[in-house]
Image 1 (cartoon, helix red, strand yellow):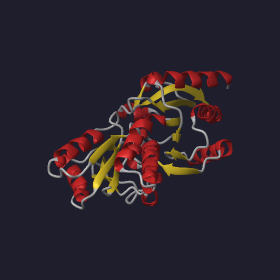
Image 2 (cartoon, rainbow, N blue to C red):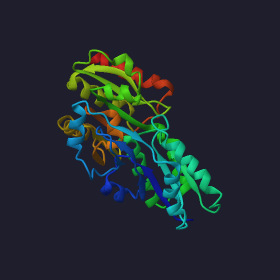
Image 3 (cartoon, one colour):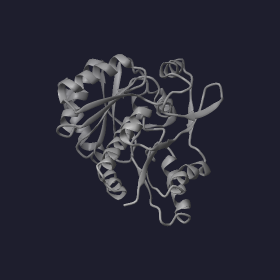
Image 4 (cartoon, rainbow, N blue to C red):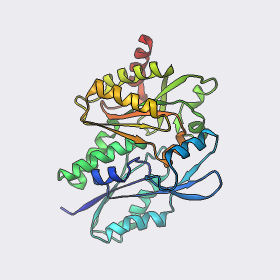
Length: 309
């Protein structure tokens, strides 16, 4: 069995220590343009700005924009490992949120003729942030267990629709501006203390499926929703936030008390994702039941929960 590397992009929210722990060999940053007009790599490790400074600036209506690297850079990123005689499993940000997946597929196609003996498998995670990171971490676990590149890729394709999110973004103007969440327009307007709850749909887009008032009801709804959708004896749950530390810590405590997962991995959403989300996100990512078409079942679950709050 040929050796292979697991690669990803700057949407995974996996900092260096997590990438090393889970065997994520490398990632390709995108571009991020700051409010003053200069552009940097959208890295995962906050080398040039702290999360607090980043999200505080967004609270003051500063806008950041992101973009992907050109195809030549994507090809060079892959080719570095192909030259070493290694196969590539690349786990990409959802195609519904970015052109990253398409660029990876194109780069893989362009390189396959030059390296006919190498395998380049590109998986669309249909996820972002901690959801993408969770899938990457599980793929890394499987590689360490001795699974082949084909086995890991097949597992990802068969199980990515079991990767859930539940939580809120309490300021939707960034998502609305960037088009990163469906149904946003229906929830714009007077949002004082309103907490919309979103889930991944099967197209890889965030979709708002209900709303509640205040964090107390939000957390109650989230825990009940997780009870209805999470896998038994959860191995790993990611809990992520964008400048909502107190609520982030509270949610971790609630999840630990209710579900006793093997581990909770707390993450601050990286700048590539955070530029579109803005401050105000508190979300849990976990594996569970397969997500239904159109989120019909998930919407029904949440509406029943909401009626009891």
